[in-house]
Image (spheres, rainbow, N blue to C red):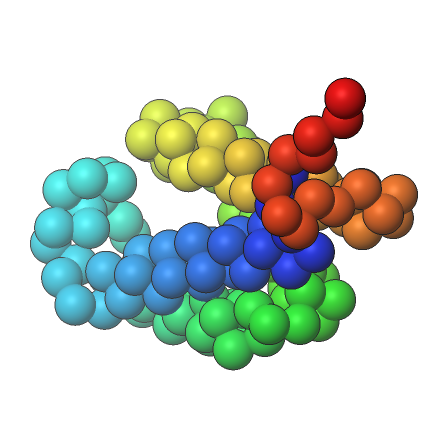
Length: 133
C-alpha cells in the first residue's frame, strides 16, 4: 500500500495530466485526433469537450495535495467519460478505440475506490510493508 496521501497524489497526477494531454489533442491537431478516434461530425463539440477536459484535468492537478477535494472531480470525470465511451460505442456513434479509454477510466475509478477504502479503514503503510514477526 502507499502512504496516506501517496495513492491519491499519484492518481491525481496521472489522471490530471492525462486529461490535460488528451483534452489538448483535438485543439492542437484535429486531423491526428480523428485519425485515431474516427471522423467527427461536429468539430466544435469535440474542441469544447477537449477544453472542458483540460479544465477538469487542471483542477485535479491543482488539488492533488488535498485528496478530499480532488476526488469528487476525478471520480465524476472518470464516470462521465467511461459512461460516454461505453454508450457511444454501443450506439455505433463512436469507434471501438473508445473502449480503451473506458478501461483506463475504470482503472482510475478502482484506484480511487482503493484510496477511499484505505482512508476509511485507516489501512496505510507510510513506510512500506509491515514487518510482522
